[in-house]
Image 1 (cartoon, rainbow, N blue to C red):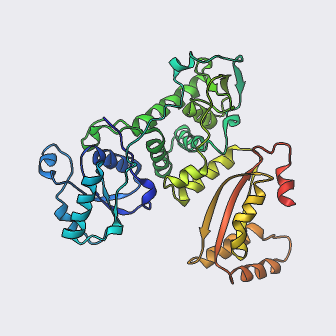
Image 2 (spheres, helix red, strand yellow; image 1 turned 180 degrees about the vertical axis):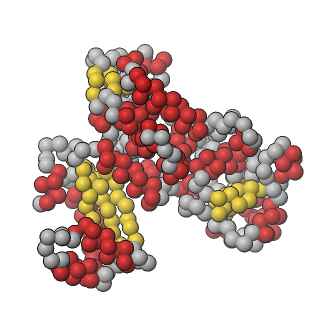
Image 3 (cartoon, one colour; image 1 turned 180 degrees about the horizontal axis):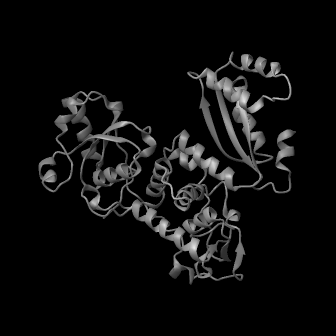
Length: 382
């Protein structure tokens, strides 16, 4: 059976949505939404709802849509373009749904690129050096921020807490990145597979590693470009437990380097998600810092970033809008710049001047990745 990934990037987190279609696509979408908690499915509809309800699947008639007070979007969960278009026209014609509310995409189907080595595939490639015992922090890169997300989950597991926001972030990333398939028991009171299987496996991994350390036979294969080929969960667990890892260099394949902050943005991860990811990176990477860009120079933000990239690594950016929260803007500015040892009249003046522009800030997390020959903090000062 094909797997299909919900278009998280097309809606905002917490929206009330209608899901139309309960075939393979709709079932995948429904399970993913329940797993991630990303959006509220206020109605799941299908023309064959009667037979599906007899199977215990919570599908209703599309006529129920007329009873809803407000919905943000309708997701047409159908793979075939022509059929999806017919459904869209029917919704517009019979239920007076605006076209811009209806979402359909021809990119639902998950394509497995098969870039990662399993144990059998590893034997096809040559080991070029003996095993090395290193810090898992050496595996952290701005182009492998998926590791930061895994770390957040592993850390929660190690400390015995369950943070719904971290679970949702992890689940959505796994669904989009790995195409985790959620099996049918999602509709019934029985065991769930899919992303929950990933989480349970991570729990077992953390428990085992906490007891016995990082097993040498479970070494991490490193590609020609210095990036791990697989073992991201093992690395994340080691980060959470502060355990060194075993690695070995392989030839013939390169590790993926496309999991940058831009990947998360393109796949619909919101500001809160990005803040969590960048904070995890900052907690783990030794030499990093924050640069704030304020609204008076907003037109030059892109130029300033381009210049900064010549001297340091920009891990990611977050745009913050305080238009409706000017007091929070003042408090943030004073929290950063005020000094209890001297009068802050100049800070107060700057706050008032900044309030004459848009109350927007761009936060840049920077590090010395790729610039180890420079002192990051002196570079920022200059």
